[in-house]
Amino acid sequence: MSTYTRLPVTFERGEGPWLWDTTGKKYLDALSGVAVCGLGHAHPAVAEALCQQARRLVHTSNIYGIAKQQTLAERLTLLSGMERAFFCNSGAEANEAAIKLARLYGHNKGIATPTIVVAENSFHGRTLATLTATGNRKTQAGFEPLVSGFLRVAYNDLEALQTIAKNSTEVVAVLLEPVQGEGGVNVPDDDYLAGVRAVCDQYGWLMMLDEVQTGMGRTGRWFAYQHTSIVPDVITLAKGLANGVPIGACLARGEAAHTFKPGNHATTFGGNPLACSAALAVLDTIESGNLPARAAELGARMTARLRDKLIPGDGTERKLVNAIRGKGLMIGIELDRPCGELVGQALQQGLLINVTAERVIRLLPPLILSDQQADQIVDTVVELVIAFARTAGV
Ligand SMILES: Cc1ncc(COP(=O)(O)O)c(C=O)c1O
Image (cartoon, rainbow, N blue to C red; front, side, top):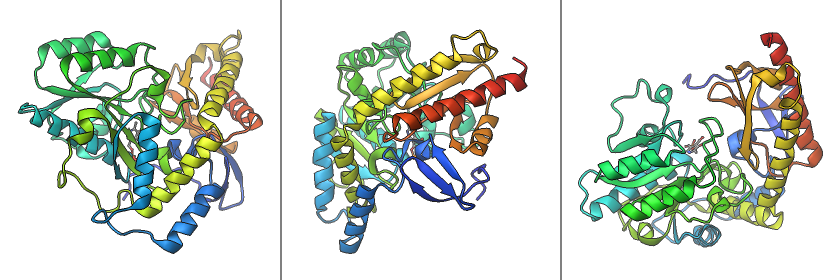
């Protein structure tokens, strides 16, 4: 179906941060399949794990024990400070699990219409409940009636959250991205998550963080909330968890970890041996390469170089760039006007980038970049922005 506006390119091979299209042209990937292939393409450890597992056992069912799912759950909960895991196949499904969990948690407390607070400009997926949670009218348009049981609040606005807390007795949880991805790489104030935690504690709400895009080392820590001293009650993961093999996870601790009982939630494919073997290889590789720290280092290098070249000069480009922001290897360059055409122009230059929220160039490169490759991405982006400024007559 015509659900995508596809770029005129088809890739047939990848290696590390490089991709080759069907004509043999080589590209540097600064998008990683939208924050998925954090270890780059065709990573040997993941490929080997998949081949070995495929020869042994691909799928049984969650009716039976799955040793690798158990191991993956133990490792992820240890890394995240959570206690239990539910595995599924995508970010939307991970958030659906969190939403259902929050509703059940509410009903268990005697709340008749459990309500979840979500943020403006958020993105949580395309299923009906996650689409409703998503704070973008354009994405929702045409799919009404949406799901009830959500309240929307401005992101990074603690006062707005407190106002809701004072006025609603039906709220059971907050669902937020620790850094908004699709919404424009929006980084909240340093004390925002701690403030949300305090409100959740005061009112007995679950604090649920959507780490689908920010998780797995991308922001410079295993999980983005680990930049702060708080721990949420629920986190959701997908994207980078198995480097391109579909998987999602909803992790929880405390009461939230024990809310689902047998029969409350399930999936056919979720957490099957094949996907879990890929995820375990990803965890090993992130751990042995100390990749969250490397993401922090590369992100600092890239944003410093971008700022150096795009912000302080007296050149025309200065007026075009509103802000350069991000955390680790989640980088946004906000221009003062829509700039979607930069994606095609970058492609011609052999670079994969993305533009989100119409005017934010988004970079989500793999965590295994060399310094030189990171510089090459920045230099090409800078050239494109300067050329864009010239044609825009800025
Ligand atoms: C923060 C966040 N949550 C959820 C999703 C949905 O994930 P999926 O496309 O795997 O359903 C995305 C996808 O971009 C995302 O960025």
